[in-house]
Length: 161
Length: 390
Image (tube, rainbow over all chains, first blue to last red; front, side):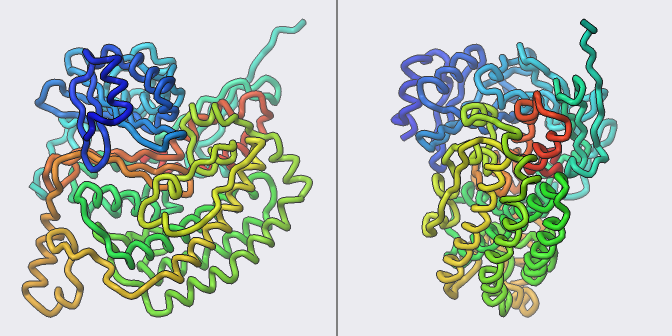
């Protein structure tokens, strides 16, 4: 069970009020947390639980639900060779979250990409600029309300429902 | 004392040694690099956005075009992620052929790395030799899948087709001849004074910094971190093969060069073991809801045709959930994070590109070096812009 996972037990002791849900699916443990203490949670995971590598930062847009965005951190522990996924809830009305780039420097570019494609602002980020799109681009392409064909186009309806 | 002045130099996006369309804005104090600002995104095609509007089978060809030097590794990461979501078993023969082709892909990708890295530093002979050998793998690719680069050979559930007659012989020829070619390249480079002067002590990054920066693959092992996903989190039956994971000591470009060379030799050993264990059997899982029917059924029966048509147009539904599956691609950890809402298209597909994260450490590796050494650092990172920009 996911609740017996070493990291989850330790996290629950320390950050009981921040944890929203714990889920295990296909052997992968996902912890959903509130965004306020994300930096403390990540530092704790890195220093006390040896999740020394931040593999990936991304986001998922659940348009029409509250909270709209989930920022997803895929962590890996090289000494223990296991993975943990932490998801932080971000509302559309307050579309910001604190940066973890001072915990792992790999977060720098990965967070820039999330900002670029989803429009989530990372507070205290050292260099929050667009990375894949051009600097003068309007909109955030990976949002679900951004048309596939590009800005100012009707959504494509011909195929695949 | 004169006031210190820096000069800003633009490198790329059209530059032969940036391996694609990478633009670097470099601040120089004389010839010494003070600051590097990479600009990427020139090749952004929106693969992640497109995949949200395509069925799972239709997304597969898009993955070929991420790291176009190692298409089968991308296919492998993607199909493994979908198969994990579906929770299906893959026949053993399909797994073994996947290992053989994934390791051939590693050879193919590393040969391009070697060729371009050497050419960037001025060793042109190696470039021509390595491309000659890469051609042998490309021809095998073509016989296997019909395409030299964008192979699209795997399918969710197995392989698109069984290997051709004579595949074993072609692979055996590669196993027999490639170690000799590696000796030739090493003879040209490993003790070459010019090569050593350009690579030893260049682009040093400590193990701690490399982990912190998220560097994976040969670049991380060159910094002395003994970590390989094929061994530590095995997939597709890699646990059955014995191979060495090389690690460097001095964390410099020369150590990364040695690590990649040993990796190529180990890849040949894995291919050899996999070829020995290749047994006849099905290459597609027995999952009619997911897999395409055999071609003879499609051509000869109406039921087969309808079956094919249903899967080609509607695809298949995937249980609700999310998975992250990563493979040890030639460049590092290539991960696919898939979120399914229960429909026939991914709700969200995220590609974790190794080159993107590796490139973000370029400033750490090249700061304080001469501008000519930056070319060696780009070469040793082994980046592919198709994967960085997606």
